[in-house]
Length: 83
Image 1 (cartoon, rainbow, N blue to C red):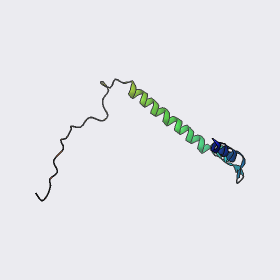
Image 2: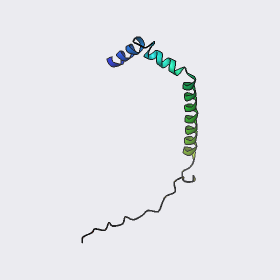
Image 3: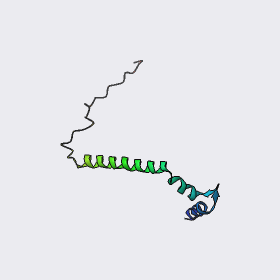
Image 4: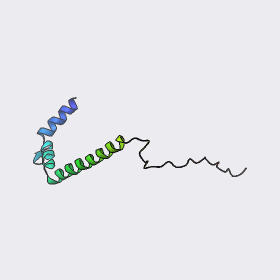
């Protein structure tokens, strides 16, 4: 708990160059690139969630499997040399 308090104090009061740690974070997150990253991440997360909802809503007995089962293979004995 005290480590968290020290981290918060450090991040808010100790200057690192012309800004504190939290000041740097605020400046970074305000850039257009950070906004593009957030928008792209949100869009992709929405696509993944939609795909999962669609897959989970289907009856597994009726839904075609993307990974058809391969025929099982029987293990083959390993030949031992010298016998």
